[in-house]
Amino acid sequence: MSAAETSQPSWREWLLTERPQSRVQARAGRAYISWRRFTANRLAVVGLLIIVALVIVAILADLLAPYSPVIGDVRTMRLLPPSWEHWMGTDDLGRDIFSRVIYGSRLTLYVIVLVAIIAAPIGLVIGTVAGYAGGWTDAILMRITDIFLAFPKLILALAFVAALGAGIEHAIIAIAITSWPPYARIARAETLTIRSSDFIRAVEIMGASPARIVLRHVMPLCISSLIVRVTLDMAGIIIIAAGLGFLGLGAQPPLPEWGAMIASGRLFILDQWWVAAMPGMAILLVSLGFNLLGDGLRDALDPRGER
Image (cartoon, rainbow, N blue to C red; front, side, top):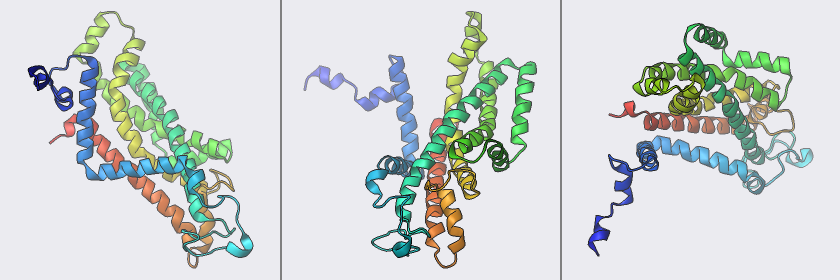
């Protein structure tokens, strides 16, 4: 082995160097350190595996589901208990619950992704603008935020869905409208800290406009905290969506939405417990996965959490 080869640093040393030679190396090093913190938390890894499994199941639902999620046989397959043929039993319309739970993962993933895409940017924009502008802009935006925070999410979502009408799209809009205030609060708190930093003052002296400062310098520094909060809120979003479905205001029959499945099974909870228990277990497992993942991301993305 030549002297040149022995002098070459390993990829791990390249990532962990205290003197990165480029912006790419610095970002890769930070990402690697965050990943090491994350994987050190075994429960967080379990949460990540649960969410990855949810995504895989949702993508491959057509291949994994043994039966149709909407067509059943009332005469011969109604309310059958769990067996090798029907792993989770059948419901009151003779439909395979296992297949419906698998297809229901698509609806769950659809809801949480769209809510995150809608609510997180709204909260980020409102919070950073309020924190950086200050004065009457901050006062007005935060009072609007306080009004939304004054009502429980589920009650406010029910009000919006009642006004918009039942349906999965209207439920997503209602949940998104009620989910952005915490993100705005977090973004504002981060912005108030960043606003007095030396590099922000330097950018201001160079003549950058307030819009450019907020978009290019403030928002990127708020994203990590926002990601953690969004991940932790996913469990609550799933429960609210299931609650709307349980009340008949979310996804409409025959769509296999987990909350609506629990609602249809509540009439048989004493004798045919699996009809409501199986989708309830799916909600519990996915909510647990997001909570574990959020806790791990909080520890990994927050350097102040190191001990």
